[in-house]
Length: 186
Ligand code: SAM
Image 1 (cartoon, rainbow, N blue to C red):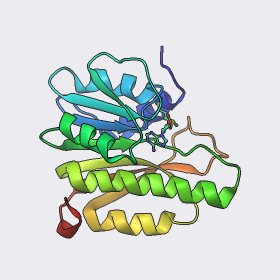
Image 2 (image 1 turned 30 degrees about the vertical axis):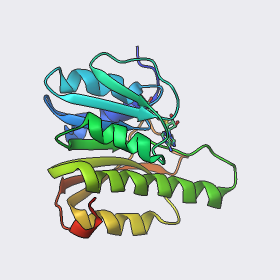
Image 3 (image 1 turned 90 degrees about the horizontal axis):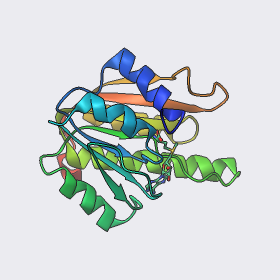
Image 4 (image 1 turned 120 degrees about the horizontal axis):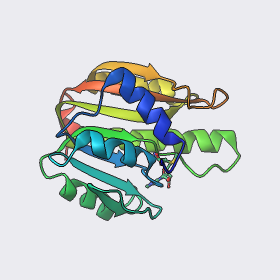
C-alpha cells in the first residue's frame, strides 16, 4: 500500500499530464514519508534515477536514492546535485512548512519553499525539463507565477480530487524549461 494520501494526488496528476516517464532523472523534494516516491519509482524504472530528499527520515523505496536533510542547507543541496550528475528531467516538490497557525507566517514560509524548489529547477533542470510544485494560494503566489513564466514555456494548475477542497493548496506544473535566466545559474 501507499504510505500517504499524497500518493493519490500524484497519481491523478500523472494520469492527466503523464509527467513521469521511463528513464527519467527525477528529484522528489519534501518526499517523506515517501508516497510520491512510491508512485514515481516504478514509472521511472531501473534505467532512470529517482532521488528523494526530506529533513525527516523515511523508509527506503526500491530504486530510489534517499537523502535525509534540510534543503535550506548547502550540504544537502550539494548531495542532491551530486546524486543527479547529468541534471534532472523533473523536479517535484510537495514541501510544506510546519504550520505555526499564524496564517501570514505560514503563507510566507510556504512560498519560500516553493521558491527554493524553483531555484533548484533553475540550477539542475535540463532544457525541456519540468517542475511540479505545491503552491498555497495567497500572498506571494502571483509573484511566483511570474517568476515561473520567465523560465518555462507553459504552466498548468492542478487541484487533484485527493487534495482537500478546503485547503488552499494547488499543484503547478511548469513545462518546457528554457534556460533564459542565465545569471541565476551557479
Ligand atoms: N510527498 C510526500 C508523500 O507523498 O509522502 C508528502 C510530503 S509532506 C506534505 C511535506 C514534506 O516537506 C514533509 O515531510 C516535510 O518534512 C518536508 N519539508 C518541509 N520543509 C523542508 C525542508 N526545508 N527540507 C526538506 N524537507 C522539508
